[in-house]
Length: 238
Image (tube, rainbow, N blue to C red; front, side):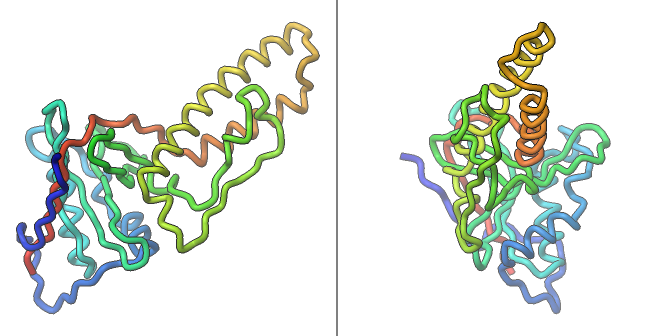
């Protein structure tokens, strides 16, 4: 069985470490750093600045900020091109994978993403702002009754669950529910416009509002990548 490989002092950085004392950030410090950092806004160029360029740049920016940061390489089972990203060993939430690979076109959209890696499973990413400790519990509804009052799942602040692969699986289920309830909503609107009294105008209005709330929570609907075969984590040599 392929195992995760962890190299503790493999890649050196071009950033001068003189007078820099590196430490592991908290989760909140990592979030603030990613939101302030502009690496995700750089243009992706396959032969010049690809995922490796994004990962190395973010690593060097993190070092300048005083944070330990790893360069990570992922190998996929179908032997497609490998992928590069970063990892931070947060002091309160443990190991967090970060993917800031951006777009081929100039955009104002944020490409800061949390990556979810598990050997034998597909590589998943969720927008940073969509990683939540409180979110709509879509398992409480049928797709055709999403007009009902919203109920939420809340995890303790010290929980690491939203950074686990199980959370990613749950996020995918919520995305699938979104697709299903939008389809059901559109069908209900057509019936209403034909004179059906199955749903009231107020119910349809609440349904649309709930869909908007769920879309906002889920963020960009990034498709999963290939199945992960191997993960190599390189912590630079200080």
